[in-house]
Image (cartoon, rainbow, N blue to C red; front, side, top):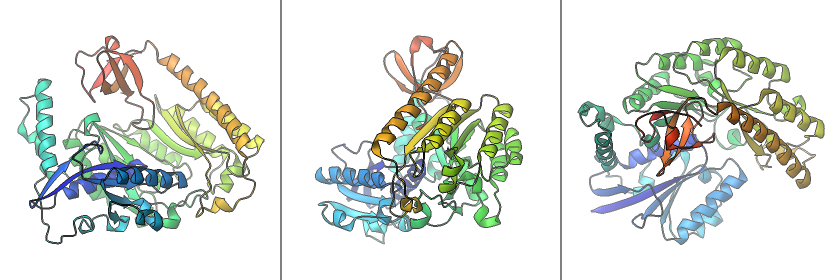
Amino acid sequence: MKTFYFSTINLGCSKNLVDLEFMIWNIFNLSNEIDIEFFTDPDTKEVEYLIINTCWFLSSSRKEAENLIKEYDDLGKKIIVMWCYSEVKDDEFLSNLKHLYAVIPHNESKNLDLIFKNKSLQTLKSKLAWVKQEKLKKYLKNIGWDNISSKAFIWQSQDVRAYLNADYGYEYLKISEWCDNNCSFCIIPNIRWRQKSRSLEDILAEVQIMIKSWRKEIQIISQDLTRYWTDIYKEPRLLDLLEKIDKLDWDFKYRLYYLYPDILTFNHLERLKNLKKMLPYFDLPFQHISPKILKLMWRFYNEEHIYKFLGFIKENFKNAFIHTNFIVWFPWEEEGDFEKLKDFAKKYEFDSVSMFGYHDEVLATSNKLPNKINDKIIQERVLELREILEEIYDKKYEERIWKTHIWYIHEISWNKLWVRPEIKAPEIDELDYIKKENVLSEEIWIWKKIEYRL
């Protein structure tokens, strides 16, 4: 019998991870002629094939992919390069690899013949599903839930993809692909396609699979959520989708990523107020606040709109958590522009900020802009902004001490826990580190909600 003992590495965003999960599930639905085994650790000795799901968004991402591919090629793994890098790949680099097995471009993501080169392959009962089911049964027995109905496991045979975050109770739901924004610093529209939204029916079907498979948090993602269905109906229909998800009868919550303020109206925010299961987590990629820099970035909103937007959120959403992105040292960013950005951070005391340094990308429009910032000024501005953000985070941490919180456990050691507040986003916001003695709940296990004090 043929064997396919494999592991995977995901580089880049959560949207990439969703694609990889579908690929894993497709592999486990091939043929009973093949012995398939999946290993979570790519360094496991038995791993023969390694699928590396690559990112191409920045030149640094492409370099990271090449370094990782070369590392595992040197270890003798049969390398399968998947998706994004294949769009901008360096053929000379790939031709020098000793163990390159396949390259899978994004538009061929369902063509597993590129891996197996055998068109007679049919369906395979998933060993991965069986293994996960047995582990879950054992796990439930250990916590006293062994009398649960066997119907709880039916979803395993109906699943549409592997769930790599199952241990932590959350999963990502991608509702559309690609982007129509044409930001001057971004290369997505140049090497990909325009936005393509999934149907509402398709999304709702997947949500029901998720909630029946014990996903307690659904992370709804897209390159731009606010433009969902504009490619179909010429107007945004995100709220229509959310209202249907919100009515599903199950104990779960969901979070939204990438809400662009140029298309999200106050009417939309009013409708968001009525959603019962939405976590009040606002991921708003402002990038900057200076009108001049926003114009150069091709961002179509201004200071006044942003201030009103944030004021409405803080006034109308109790315990709102606001995450944003800043791009610093963008071309033409002068001292006055940077001062406005610092004042913006101080005024609104964002709960979480992802700070990115500007990178020239050959295919990006901003690459042609003059007045690039020199390295000395870059380092000075990074330190200044980082110091402001750290002061804000320290203040917010002090405000949380001695209060009771609801959190998810992510990791357990002999007397300490790494925990994530329910309001914080996994893989983006920092975890807290606490002692077991501060946990107020009687039972402790991974991805369980607990009460505790810092």
